[in-house]
Each structure stands twice: as structure tokens, then as C-alpha cells.
Amino acid sequence: MAGAQHYDVIIIGTGAGGGTLAHRLAPTGKRILILERGDYLPRERDNWDSTAVFVKGKYRAPEYWYDKDGKEFPPEVNYYVGGNTKFYGAALFRLRPEDFGELQHHDGISPAWPIDYADLEPYYSQAEQLYLVHGRHGEDPTEGPASADYPFPPVEHEPRIQQLSDDLEKHGLHPFHLPIGVNLIQDEKGRAVHGSACIRCDRVDGFPCLLGAKSDAQVLCVDPALEHDNVTMITRADVRRLETDPTGRTVTGVVAELGDGSTETFAADVVVVACGAVNSAVLLLRSADDRHPDGLANSSGQVGRNYMRHNNLALMAVSKEPNPTAFQKTLAMNDWYLGADDWDYPLGGIQMLGKSDAEQIHGEAPRWAGAVSPDMPFEVLAPHAVDFWLCGEDLPRPDNRVTLDADGGIHLALDEKNNTAGLKRLRHKLQGMLGQLGMHPHHLLSHSIYLHKGMPIGATAHQAGTVRFGTDPAASVLDVNCRAHDVDNLYVVDTSFFPSIGAVNPSLTAIANALRVGDHIADRLR
Image (cartoon, rainbow, N blue to C red; front, side, top):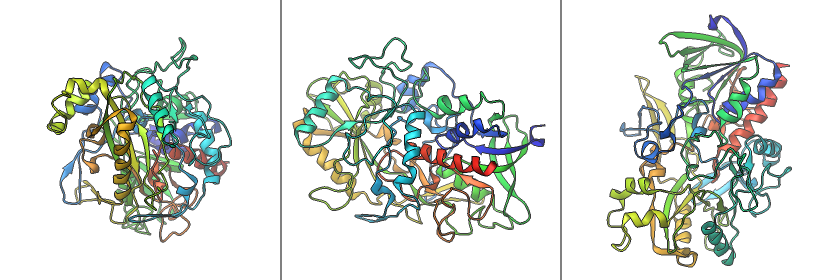
């Protein structure tokens, strides 16, 4: 019986945190059990179908959470091997060095981390190697120092995006090649060579990759880890609670409902939770017992609090010239990341989205009715669309939190207007440049299909916080090594540990931290 075996490490979840940790620990020879509530994503034509993925949400988890008013909403979560990395856009940015310190924003303070950029830098470099990141260090004036080059040169801009980059430079700005994780080998013209796994298609952003060419945790970490005899994975294993010994200081049981309907308890010397910021908090809260009446590892009262998810805008501009770009996600710009000449506070960053197509635009049509002039019918929009993602920092607030009701329902309270002034200014700056960038100046349309139908609370793809790390057990849940202050053998390695979120995609930081914590756990197991 599987439950009779004792493991050295149990890892719950296979995304950017859990999957990467499994890869790091696999060569140690220690007995590792990975528990994943989902299964492998089915490989099928719908993986690349806009209507299936975006309009119908075929692969989203069939579950509902509740907002602060008790209204249900479908969260943007995917339960598969590889977690949300199966669907992410693979934009793999480092946080800026300033993000690790205290930053004053318009609406409050972004708190300092208990580690600084230099502590994580070696692991950022290792993460970029592991996840096949294409980019060029030194182009972005806001980035920190790098101890190693990216393993691959940047993905080359297609002509319309190269023109956009040139036009931005003419305005004294500093566009740079977006760091992206794809298994691509290019020729001198930027085309995919014969042996390249990635074909530079238009399905990179939000779609799972049918070719296994996107740098996701399943392809690069979980599958290679499972080649080691000491690593086992059970899919369709939904972990319901963690049990502790009578002192409450050690997790002794990991209780999971299996795909056949049975319940099994597993045990290990070290237990690592990596279920995503919301579900990791949920698991700890659901594991309340006599020693931990408010939830496991929650003597601070901080479990579930300080949820963050970025202030995002997905926008579509309309190019005067056609935009036949396929692989559009190659450019970003951080000139106003920390402030601007007319604003003392951080605004955030601009990056390209994957290229929208006619199905996505048709799915938006009801929202855009009246927003587009009669000379620009919807079928003309798609070939002229240029898609931008604007990302501003969300601030941690104790009342932005995850809680459970008496029936176990997940409630997510969120102030959707938290620190949004910088993002509005960022949009205004982009809008003001459109005419000089070869776009129609009056068409900057909200592209809500990327933002879970324009519903900020449902857009949980960048979820972070809820189980923050720190040096003070009264104000944090985890110590600097992401071990629970209250429980000796419990770690959390997804984006829950973030004390702040910065204004770049959180995946690479989760990956780098999983490598860092992996080294700590490997030392402990020795």
C-alpha cells in the first residue's frame, strides 16, 4: 500500500515552485513523492483553439470561489501536471533590485523582503538556464546585475514589432527583448530551424504548447525528475489536510483523496506545500487542529492574508499598417517602472501579449460595441491588432485575504482599486504615444479576454502572498528558508511566500526561490 511507505520528502503541487523543487531534489537519491491534484493535460487540437481556451475556458478548473460579498466567480486556475505554467505566457523576468527593498507607492508601502537581490541572483541565473530563457542582459536599464548570460539569444522581433521598438527608441525610451522561456533555435533571420522544438507560432500566450516547446514545469522539471528511480508521482491526488504529532511541531500525515474515491495518508520527513497562493493558504487553514486552532502554522494570524495579483491591463491598439506578426511576445519596456518625470511613484511595465486573433476579437465584440468607428469593422481589427500588457504593482493588504466558510468554500476578499493610480498613468502614457507609433490614437481597447472577462478578482494567474516569509514569527508565516515558523518540517515554495509582488511576472522568482530552498532542504536531508 502506497500510504505504508515513508518518504524523505513529499511535494504537493507541480507548478513553478513544486515542479522545480522536485527537479532540484531528484538527484539527491532521497525518496520523493509528488502529489498532484490534476492529471496530465490532454494533448488535443483544442490546446491551440482560441474559442476553447479563452472564450469557453475549457481547461480552467470547474470550481467557484466567493468574493467578499459572497458572490461566486470562476477563478483562473488550472489543475494539471505543471500547474499554471502549462498556460502561462513564459515571460520570465527577474524582480528589480529595488523590489527587494521598501518602496513608496502612491497608495502605501511595498514592504522589504528578508533577503535582497544579491541573495537570489545566483538562483535567477540558474533558473534562466533551466527554463531555457531567451533574452539579452543589459538592454533594460532597470534590471539588476547578472552573473551569467541568458542561455539563448533573444527571440528576434518580427518586422512590425521591430518597427515599434525603433519608434520607441526614437522617443528616447529603452525597449528591450522580453525574456521568454521557449525551446527555440533560430536562424540568422530569426526563423525556427529544422531541429527547433518551437516553431514561433501565434499560440504562445495563454495556450498550452502541443509541441512541448514552451518552458513549463511539467516538460522541464517534473518529467525529468520522474526519470530518477527515487521519485514517484501520484496524479489526481487532492490533498485535503495535513496532520501533526501531539506537539503540533511536526507534520506526520498528508491526507489525500485519490482519483478512485479512496482516501490515503502519506508521511515524510519533510513536507512541501506548493499549491498556489490561494490553495496553499486554503490547505493550511483547512488543517486546523487543537494545537493550531486557526490553521496550521498560523500563530501569527497571517495565513491567507496579504493576497496580491498585480494591477493589470490587457489592451489592444490598432496599427495603421497591417500587423502580420505571429510570435508577438518579444518586446517589453520598463522606463516608468520606478517613476516618471511627472510622477514620483512607480507606474509599472509594458510588454507585448501574444497576438490576438479573429476568434478572440469576436469573443470581445459585445464589450467593444460602439468603441470602434464604423470604418473599422471587427474583421478588419484582427490583422491590425497590436496587443499590450500593462502591469502595475498591487500592494499587500491584510484584508485582501483568503478565508474558508463553514462548508469549506473558498472566499477571496480583494480591494480591486488598491494602488491603481500608477497603472492609469501608464495607460495614459501609452495612449499618448500611439499616433507616433503608427497606431490609431483613439483606439486602445480593453482586451478583457486575457483578464478573465474583465473581472479583476477572477484574474488569479499572478496570485501571490498569503503565506509570506520574514524574520519575525509574529508578522510572517515562514522563515527566510520558507520553513514554517511553527512547524519544523513544513515548507511552502510557490508564490505564497512573496511579501511584495513587484510589477513583473512572478514565475521566475518562484522558480529561483524553489532552487534556493531546494539546496537548503538537500542540506537538511544530508
